Image 1: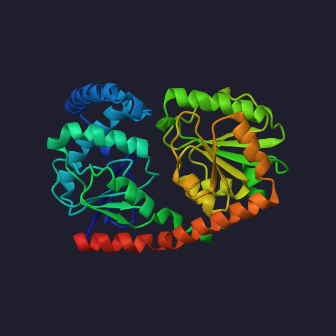
Image 2: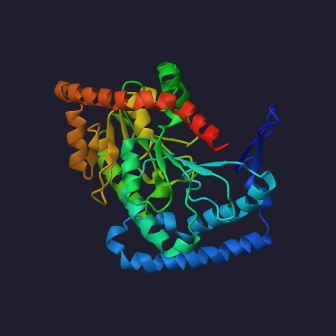
Image 3: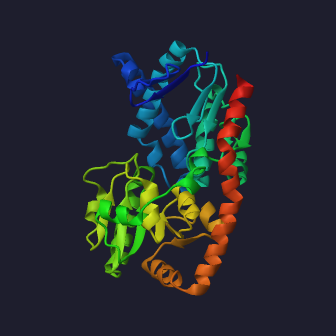
Length: 364
């Protein structure tokens, strides 16, 4: 009789006694806190050495801040107790939680891609891990969303032994979603008559400088578009109260918490703004054009490569895209590109659960 242990930040009981939900913070002790603090400081020191040698290549370093690293180390050390207690035969993780196999775990470890693979970040991670070769425990198999992600990760093979394209199961059911637009407008108190821009924020993954630049740029843009709605959907992992987005002083601004239903918001949106959110794929499935908000570097996202997005670095970039999207010719081209994008991805997404199930069966 197989059991599934799930570790996160909540404890929950289910009728099926094979599913056991644990809050890993229940295992935190003073000694674990102390150990996490020491290890985090050592990592920060090593990181700074690498950073100052490679400044030009490392634009986004907020992920490697002390609070971020401390929480990761604390989670990793606490998980060691969990592995021991559960005697797991196989371990699966979202890659934003854990990509490397835990050092004291000897069974199969499989991370699943949960966000877009960012090349700048991969460059840094490969350099960073190169300093810890003696303690790197590579994942056995990394399940990624597309051949694009696989090719990118194979350029920086520091974290996994093998990579397989499985797609992402969370996208498989979008075709079955049924939403009443009228109900959505009423629920969020949004004006129906205005064009709607939905901004999917990623404050937690961007530097303080970039976040401030984004606030300044968006404020300037929407000051010039008084008859447009801007919905700002916070990322679930970022601060939800008294956010930096309160500084945006414009009409028709709606700040929505990270727990809001993304599909509801997409159903009423005309354009989606993001930096490199994976939710851009969900926007594409809804046939919504994307604006990539990036005023700090020359990174090209998958969306731009697939020609379903426009890069926005300045006010004029945005206004040009705003006008262009109202032309019939551009809409026809964009619609064709979105159709191609969805044909290439949707069939894969619908087969994802079965693919991952088959992989798990092989390892067990």
